[in-house]
Amino acid sequence: MNSEAVIRVKNVHKSFKTVHAVRGIDLDIHPGQFVALLGPNGAGKTTLVEMIEGIQKPDRGEILITGKPWRGNEKELRKIIGLSLQETRFIDKLRLFETLRLFASFFGLGKERCEEVMNLVGLEEKRQAYVVNLSGGQRQRLALGVALLNKPKILLLDEPTTGLDPQARREVWMILKKLKDASSTSLILTTHYMEEAEQLCDYIVIIDHGTILKEGTLPDLLGTSSAVTKKEEYHGPPRNLDELFIELTGRHLNE
Image (cartoon, rainbow, N blue to C red; front, top):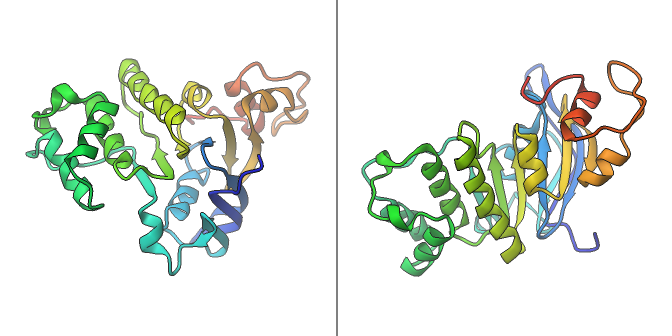
């Protein structure tokens, strides 16, 4: 890909006491690219995302957002990033549209953008509903809407569909597919769902023990799997992403 990287991670390390969570990761993410970070619990993916979004600081290495480090550029960079976490808490007694207006005010945005976002995430009929009365899927769509208010160049989603039923999960997928078709937003998605990564992302990064085991497009990954796994020699190409993950790590993704 020839475009300049919107996110550049260069030899990044991060430790917590005796745990070396991220071990020398290099990663470039380009405008419009949807990237899945796959790894079992404790693999280091959440720590990596927290460093990219400026919550954690690397012990070593460098992270550049649109060519700029976090230090000295925090205010500018936060304006171009949208976040949606596994569980986002809102004020129960605010109505849905009031919630959007509240978060839009942080960016100096008006009612028009709130209307656009509400339509994008398919919550027009819940405009006057109190947040406390929304279903889990509706809350996640609201969280995604809040993350999209500022038309971010970078969207970071940490397991956004965990705990949702299949229908609600697919509703979130449809929103993200529309976003991909209509904008140049770059997405980093952490997920435990192989199908989610396959459906949404054009580049996949498999992480375990703080290092990148393999990265690439899905066709490339399935066509060029390493012949040797952690457990035994492998004699043929994996048939899907789930098989590839097991071959590389010796574990299922949700272990």
